[in-house]
Length: 427
Ligand SMILES: [Zn+2]
Image 1 (cartoon, helix red, strand yellow):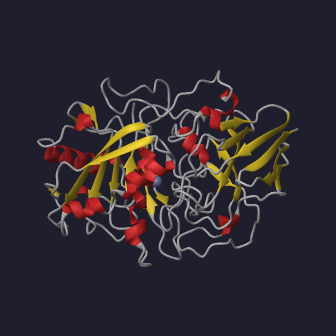
Image 2 (cartoon, helix red, strand yellow):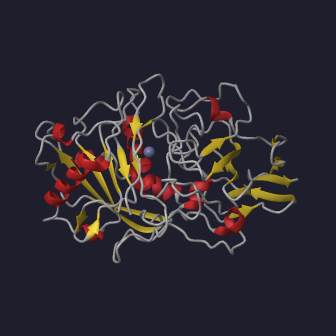
Image 3 (tube, helix red, strand yellow):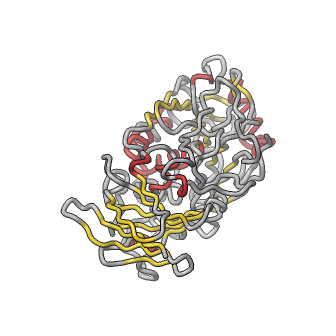
């Protein structure tokens, strides 16, 4: 199975700062995707509900050739996203970019925050275990410049060479078979400032990657520079690039597009990972296996159905997501967003409605949030939060109607506990 095309994707334009780029590589989803070798700890897919389940009509799936799809279930080859997941962290430096300070301080920029972020977002279902078995900078044999790493650099030849050199340097001290994913935390002085160009990148489901201890280094995130916007909040929010990159390792696509975060705003970390903390969409939580099927409603039948949504960011067994399929590849997702958990920037709590299209590839806009108050300018002044969509949620008394499909989603009211009652009507 050959890795397919690689793309350069400008990321969000953060508060008039330069646009930034990330590149995601995933293997083709063409026939026979069970491509990891036996014994690989990354072989299991996140979830595999069957189409025979009551949610079958909501398990939209994409077309052949989509690299990273919003379809359910996530195709095989990515790292497991539930249970204990072991993350190997290696801090690397180069002769022309020598590590500044203690390598474990670099590690400390991301942990324990990343672990906590995943525990909160997954309601404890992802037990993320980071390890840094080599406490020093791992010096690469060639200077940084020699690897040809730049914005949009493909896996071959530069990253392949880098991964080979990392494996060779770490192998005496590391058993790669013990880990589900790899984080390469690069000395921040290698390459440009993240304000100019974000080099951070993930190669996910990459079974053609170099082999270490008998397993391909198939799911690896590379984090460069520091996502520091100068607001003084780096210590609290700078780690958030890593949960974003690891999201790819678990099979999630980029939700920002060439135009930045205008499709999804701050409603998912795969859309915006600068600025205040944010959570994942309920669709992503279902895709990752963090919601039980009993917490997901599938409004596929004609007529009107009633659903009571509990806040997505809060733990509990209540309903978190309603999906309204339009056809076999697209549909509307409905969820209740409040300021809680990882969602610290929510300025207008309410019912978020968004369209999911499993045929649209990563970085091309596979998810589009419906704005209940278009051209309002939004309700946030939080830096690096897409303002216009910050007040996108629907409030009691409001409804959304898709004229083409005849689907109508009405927010009927909220109870004393804050749960929202939603009616879905299909023509
Ligand atoms: Zn990304």
